[in-house]
Each structure stands twice: as C-alpha cells, then as structure tokens.
Image (cartoon, rainbow over all chains, first blue to last red; front, side):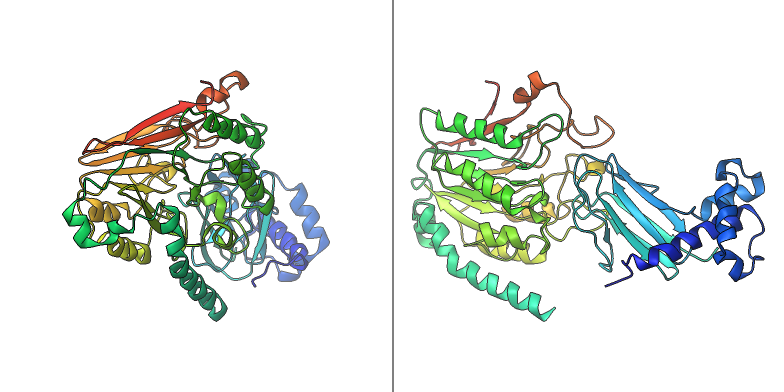
Length: 150
Length: 309
C-alpha cells in the first residue's frame, strides 16, 4: 500500500536529524548534500535540546520534529495530538495504554493492525499534507500528522 | 472492492436465509409478525419469562485489575447455572473477546456452553479487530443476521432487536448504526402493535452517557424515534462496564456490568481505561443481569447481581 517499508527508515532518520539542525541553526540555507552527510547527523545529535534553543528559534524547532517521530498513545489520547514533520519522516506510534488501540487514517489511506500494550506501528510520510487519523476502536481519539518541508 | 461487495452480498443472502432459524429458536411465536393477530390480541400473547444479560467478557484480558478474564467469566456462568429457575436465554451485549482472536472466541463459546443455554450475540468494538474488520465475528455469530450482524426475534410476545453500533466508526464520533441498519429497523418495526414490548440490545449506550469518552451512539436518536410509539421499550447495552439506568418516557435504558473489569464513572478519571480496583473488590464490580418480563404493561424488571454476592 503506502510507504510502510523499513527501507525508508534510514532516509527518514536522516531527514529528521537534518530538520533539527535546520531549526536550531540557519533555516533554509544549508545545502541539500549537507543534510544527508553523516557529519550533519552527528551535529544534530550533539545540538542543544529544543527546550534550550534561543527564544526566536524555539518555535521553529517545535514545528520541525526531531529525529525519532514518536506518538505515544496513553490515557486514550494521542500525544502529541498534532505532530509536524518533514517529508520522508517515519512516524511511530506506541501504545502505552492497557487497552488496545489502532491508528486509522480518516480518509482510509492507511490503517494499523490492532495494537495491544507496547505494540508499535510505523508509517513514512513522503508527501507534504495534513494526515488526520483516529483510533477505529475509540473514535473519539483523534490526531493529526502535518507533513511540510522545513 | 468487488470481492468485498460480493462477500457482503453473500452474507446478506445468508442472513435472509438464516432469519428463520432465529425465529424458530425464539420459540416460534411467528404470530407476532402478523399485523392482524398482533392487533387482535397483543397483550394476551405476552407470557411471563426471564432472560439474562452478560456483557464485556473481554476473554483474553489479563492486566490489572483482572489477571484472568476467563476465570471471572466462568464464575458468571456458574452463578447463572445456580439460579433456581433457568432463564429462557442469554443476551451477550458484546466485547466477547479482547482482541478478536480465534482462541478468545473459542474459549468464550466454550465457557458459555457450560450453561447449555441459547446465547444471542451482538459485537463490541473489541470483536471487530480481526484483519477483516469484523468478518471473523460475522462468520462465527452472524448466521441468521443481516448486514453487519443485526437481527430480531420474538419470544413469548416480546420483540427483541439486536443492533450493531460498533462498525465503521467515524473519526471524532461515537457508536454508529448507519443508514442501512436504520432502514432495516424501520421495516422490522413496521406493522407491529404498539403494545408489543420491545427489547433492544446493543453494545454502546443508545443515549449519550459521556461524549468525551465516546459513550453514546451518534445516530441513536433516529432509532429511538422509530421506537417511540411502543408502550414498553427496554434498551440493554454494555461497553461502559457499570450499571447506569435512565428512563425517558416509555423507554428504559440499562447499561450492564462487565464480567472482566470495571471502568470509571463518566469523567471520573483521566481516561475510560480499566479501573484498577484492589483484588478483594474486583468481584463486587463485575456481574450479570436478570430481566423478567411480566404480564400487562409493567416495565421489565431488571436485577443486577455482582459476582461477589
């Protein structure tokens, strides 16, 4: 179906790291090749945590998701409810509730198997856009992945 | 897509063929579908009897506060077997299983068989979790049903309607009946005498108990409008694992306890997840329900008994 393939994971990880670098440093001016260079990854890893970033950049850092894009499912909610990532990012949902949940696109474009406690579901978002989803078992649980270029 | 449609067509076909089976199981009171007879002597056709409701057995659940939902379901069956008078049948109002696994359904069926009683099922959302989004439930329990599993039958002059409100749920919504089922319900009720007592059983509450937790059914008002003219309507459901009752005109709503684990009162807690009561208090929070139908126009007598008593 969609981009639910492991082979995408590496590329996404890189994209995610590069996004942090962009957010914390000089937006839009870094050449593309730098984003994919291993040194760039290292830089990203040693970069200050988003919370410690200087005030003007803080918002940008928050908007551009950090490397492992994780949505935690707990207390019948998706956290964060709205996750913004760069194109190509793999988002992983982890069920931390003691009740099963699912991740199902509102437009039916993707749907996880049922996730019991500690089960995970990953999905790579290649194209920019807003992806609304919900738990098909508990439909009052809704969330959104916003995919946009940093 | 075509494959899916043809399967649905087949199931509907089977449903029609199987409806007769349910009727015969229900005691063969086919007279109640006949308008003439229903109008002639509607009240006389109601004969006293009782039946049971069990709900939310969640076979496969093994986390706090209940390490073994099979054991507590078995205790519930033992309680039923020990009743001085055996009720006519059991209604199971859904969430038979925890994860719709074959083994869970198998075990639930095996435990239910210990009573030797006929069981009528409706699915909960936990019974829709197989790859086919409920195909496993339908294959196992859907014989004699229509559409996604809805059906009706009569017993001793009482009309029973099984509604499905856990299928094709919409983002941000609650339970859902859908147009096809509502059209069927309209047809099913048409021509029945308004003095026929009606029992509706389904999984998710048919009134909004607590919207923030999805404890209601989006289009229940349409169903209740169709039921409005009947003098006695009893709505039985599960899903929220606690006894809550509400009376609105001629309609009495009753949600039942689970046999697996309790859930918090509406809004009382961070989420509707299992209420982690101490082991010694678990059985007082689980239970089964006996419903007794009497002659005349009295409302049905609903008695909830916990597993601790």
